Image (tube, rainbow, N blue to C red; front, side, top):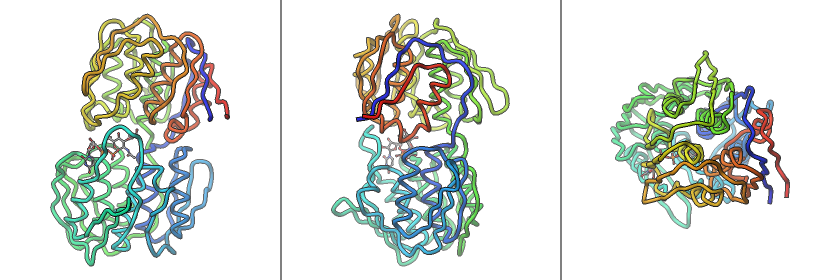
Length: 418
Ligand code: EPZ
């Protein structure tokens, strides 16, 4: 069992470069199925989810070549089906984008029911609603989701819940439908725009991505193209929080500050200095931070993916903080582990009340999901003494070279291969 060991209490100082956005990359790679040609995807993060998706596409008959550590060439010309109905596809939630892409290109697809972080029930009813509105029939049997359509016809689809995954999946399926599709109450996250830009580069006709109304005019055919993935605002936010939590002074390069407005505002509210300089942010922090309240919301609100890392920071801020998680009902699994390190947190339903303590103490802890793992990394950087984190495969699914990047900022951190 691989572990990460941190000897905490050191200020993070220096420069870190942010990688490409995991949640954009894991949608863009399946979207290449629609091209029926050669795509070159650049600025990919070096994470296991990207590698897994490359293997899945290879198994489906695509040619996948790693040009370099951040660039993948995917040629889906020779693909003639999209049936990812085997265990590997269960490893990540984003496998479900193969449904929208396979439906769009082949008018049918089959994918094993998606896995992903256990942060709540994570239903897919809005994905199904969208596919059925376009004329597809959907069945879920023996843990497999199958979608099929004689014809895909554009439709007006109102999302009952703002869903990133469903918005992207419906966009994928609608690119070559006959006629126009309108997605109302669409998610507005930056990676929705990134995926739409990639699809338009392939020849799709998508307008309004980034707003809550997305219009898609179906086209006959798409083609291969090249695309550079946007920077990962969740990785960037995690390093901003880590710098703040250790009283450090860190320059974070390769970010889009606009995507980080919510986390920047909350850190400033705590007394952290955030200096914007083009595509870089400088975080200058002290150990004397004020506790605050956060409430997770869809973009541009405070991102749910930074709720867990932020909770670690609030455990040592002065006074009482409150965290309200409105997106996922099961996203407090990191709290028990933080309490083992001396945090004072009480969870009632979707609210965690955090009383700031003078410091955390190192302990043996285990990650339960990707961002819970990030929360434990930050707690370990804060804590006096040694923290040992198990289940680090969760962390490696979504953070590119996290041990090396933190070590380069002065953290005493190492990975033990067990
Ligand atoms: C994506 O998950 C991200 N994952 C998540 O990041 C992120 O937390 C989430 O969006 C919200 O931003 C990927 O992009 C691979 P949703 P997704 O559909 O698409 C409900 C991380 O840490 N819902 O926007 O699954 C759902 O239960 C991961 O990087 C339905 O009710 O999220 C939730 O309450 C974790 N029916 C809310 O909508 C549906 O059909 C938002 O979910 C779909 C979703």
